[in-house]
Image (tube, rainbow, N blue to C red; front, side, top):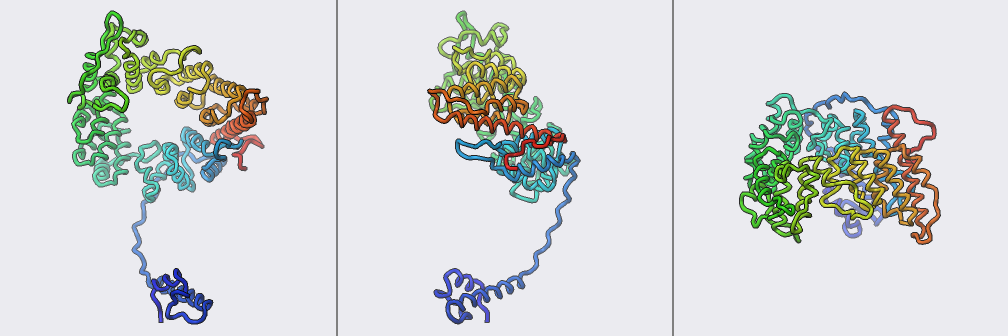
Length: 533
């Protein structure tokens, strides 16, 4: 006599005292043992009755990765970094050990720069790390290469790889028929990746592929596909983008207008320039502004958002959008062939200067105009001048040459300290130049002498761990010794600063070891490990 599996499960959940199977007899202990025996027999029956599954078709072999393998020491380092991605410490006090979670992005970037491929055995852990942290994805996917793309097709947890067009992945299919078939029949993520890779190699072919199915795509898909045109954007894309200005989706229309505004010779840029010129002119006393009194249908079609954000006036909102979409070359001719520095120096009447200059800042960033960015930034503010500038100094700095960017920020920090410099430091090239690194370390030392707590500067300290040149380790190491606390300083701050400088020193020395390992250089015995070795 046998009993159904569901009855056995029910008895196990409720207990044999409340629900005893009919085939189980005896006292409580015997009943429990009898239930287990019946369950064991039931398991055997269930397994014996399972029909074998139909074997699926084997996946294609993984493509070869022809990049050079990692040196053994570097491979072991990657294994350790992937095993312990959580870093050390929590809360304000992190201890003096390097934070491994912050070292992994640096390691990946350097490995890609040197042209290495990921070890096959570490690919699953690498893709898991990239899945958990979006900041790792670009470099992790690049290091994973074609085999990472192959693995992602077998595991839905790694589908983000299929959406990427990152370097190191397999090229788009050479056969036009195969590419067209994948475009028409593939999953959305596969189609995005295909379009991105074709766009990198042949912008015109990618545009033709997109046009072929555009009218039948969903609005959210059209937006993602349209965004891929940022790569290789040129005048050849203008007819399609002009058509997209009449799309049903507001987001698609807005993105199309943004792309057209990035083409100074486009018809939309010309229309915006005409509108901006009608609002801004030069009079005998300076620049005069007559902002629009309405947002007409033509302006809205060209991407002007009619409704301003809370607290912003309508006319100022419309004016800003017209000016930041107009080619910056518009203003030289408008203001008597003046250069950007001369235009910025002109007075702007009736309190319109902040709005006009902010719009020019956005235009300089969008159009990557270094001349205008340099003029809008000006020299670093003097000690007696306010720190705040019109627009976003970090974005303006981002389009200047690396050395000029670093020099400007170093001078700014030397004058104003670190409290306003975090975003600016974030756009400087890594590793920081020697003058910039010295300015940051000196400013941290000054903050310590002033008696401030180090976690007030934790953001800058974290950037320093990632961005300071490892050669600065000795300079920082001198500061790790405990110093006397000023009488008016925060109690106990000196010990915390000493710990923070010890961590920074250890991180820089570990980064130096990591670089040596990646370059195949022997490290000296006793070289710093990762804090856990």
